[in-house]
Image 1 (cartoon, rainbow, N blue to C red):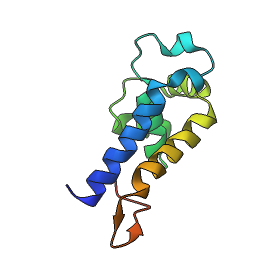
Image 2 (tube, rainbow, N blue to C red):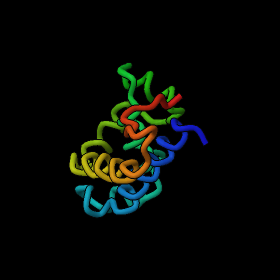
Image 3 (cartoon, helix red, strand yellow):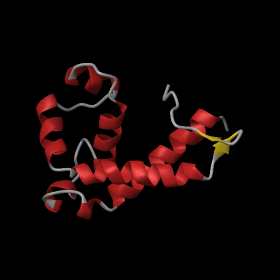
Length: 110
């Protein structure tokens, strides 16, 4: 497995952990327990992976069949603390995985 693949796997695992424990990171839990087109995992992944385009463009690249308004409404319900915890979890997972003595801090998601 290549280093970028390993980093991506660790990030996805960190997002999965936070999405599974969404009770502590969302405003109204009922909103996030129904089946939705965008899950909490999808929303966090999408927002972290934004490349700077318009919401319409980003949603098309993600193959999400939702409107920008729907994404914005769902985003408002997720605490900023959730994103902080994703990064903390990710950093803990990668801390022990060093390449030539250096920690990988960035990787291309392509």
